[in-house]
Image 1 (cartoon, rainbow, N blue to C red):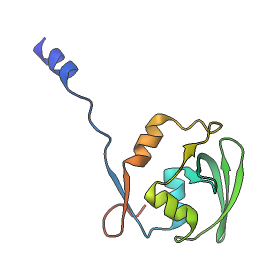
Image 2 (image 1 turned 90 degrees about the vertical axis):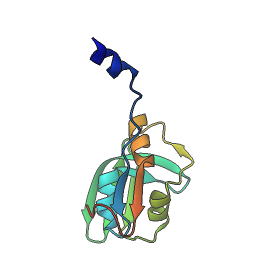
Image 3 (image 1 turned 60 degrees about the vertical axis):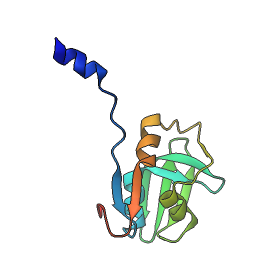
Length: 115
């Protein structure tokens, strides 16, 4: 009986920190995170991604299509690394747990998974 009470009294653990390499292939990072910041600062959820050479076509959950290039120095790459966005797309309906997981993800040059 005491064990059951102890389980109830324990606080919920914080979101686990995740570390990824900063200089990993940009397309692999996007496939892993499944989020895309558009030019106006809206964060979209990715439904599918089709890679063709140095470019890729992203289809979001709100049926928007983006043609992106494989560039680690692009605006979107910087925004993903620094977690900059103004608001979340209401059409994509990104769940709260995914946003918490994204905010707990760190990109480091010398430490983390190389995907």
